[in-house]
View 1 (cartoon, rainbow, N blue to C red):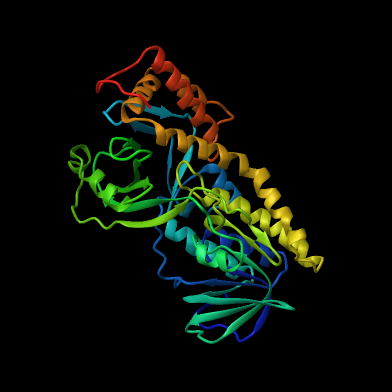
View 2 (view 1 turned 180 degrees about the vertical axis):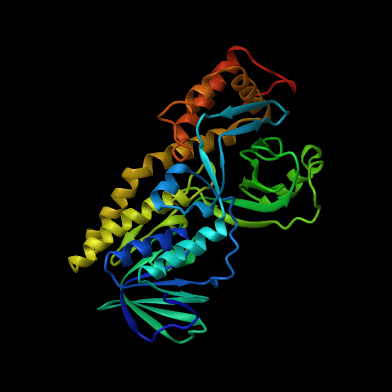
Amino acid sequence: MHVRNGASPVSERYDVAIIGGGPSGSYAAALLASGGHSVVVVEKKQDTGIIPCCTGVVGTAYAELVGLEPDVIISSAMSATFVSPFGRQFQVASPHPQALVLDRALLERRLLRRAAMAGADVHTGVVVVGIERNSAGFELRMAGDSRGKSIMSRSIVVAAGVNPGMTGRLELGAVQHYMVGAHAEIEMDGVSETEIYMLQQEARGLFAWLVPTGNHTVRAGVLSHRAAAGFLRRFLDRAAVRSRLRNGQIQVSQRPVPVAALGCTYADGLIVIGDAAGHVKPTTGGGLYFGAIAARAGVEVLSDALKRDDVSSARLSRFEREWKREFGSELQRGSRVRSLYGRLSPERVDAVIGWMAESDLVDRMIQSPSFSFDRHSGALMTGLMRGLMGQLVRPHSPAGGGAA
């Protein structure tokens, strides 16, 4: 293996420097190194200190794409219960597993190790403090144990998570729309399946979740436009939730979640993938699947460009066309779903949930062979629109009614 904590070569030259050793960056590194390119990965976290702020729920398509080992998968999910602002519930269930709960920290370590085993040089505990273009490509200046040292590279893949400062310095601008995700791992009884709570009465667009991982351990989270950690603590203090807690000591972490794509994800000699590019589901904040698709597309385009000795923006522009072809429309539909949900009143959300509980529409969509956990925005939009129309025909007004 070529993992080095801090230590970094002086002006060593590579075909590709990947900034960020998270899932997208590590996956791209392994593919590029396996293809015969010289690759270096620069990751600011120590490899032993990976503590993800993420629930780690993916569809089966991600596991197949990346080739996950069984020990990375904690459990699978075939059903979930949705709870409205005023307590209405409905359950969705599938005859087949729709989602997988991952050991998120193990996933990051495993993918980083794969990159190293494929031949990439992996430097952890190192921060890129400067990037300069030159006639040969780029010079990356480092901080950390490698302070004052640098790496030379013909090209760069930016996979550094949410990092508007870096994309801004590279003249690619920044993602314009963010939400905040808060996460906690807690001990809890009585959570046998995923529970999703629509918290529109707390804040428009707010929802929370409880995801069981076994042995009375549950991953809790919220996605909000603001104050996510506070909303999560208030959610966990609700009587129906608090009564099932085993331990009152809860540590909450939070992170920004891009819910719009970067305006341009390529330039001369570089591409941007994963959270750094906004390759994230606007509905749930999940980025593993789209990040992996973008990484694979980026590797294909960049590998071809390196072989042609042409890493110009004109050559690399195909990367943006490819990822938009793969999931650009899904991001757009997801943004519309999130916008619509954010405009609904708590009463309207409650009525829609009530209509869905009495309708077989959701069951039919979930059980359809075409349904995908990873590409669900169309189904969500259909459910919302049908639910709105259905409850307008036969309105439910548990809290005195209300309008969107």
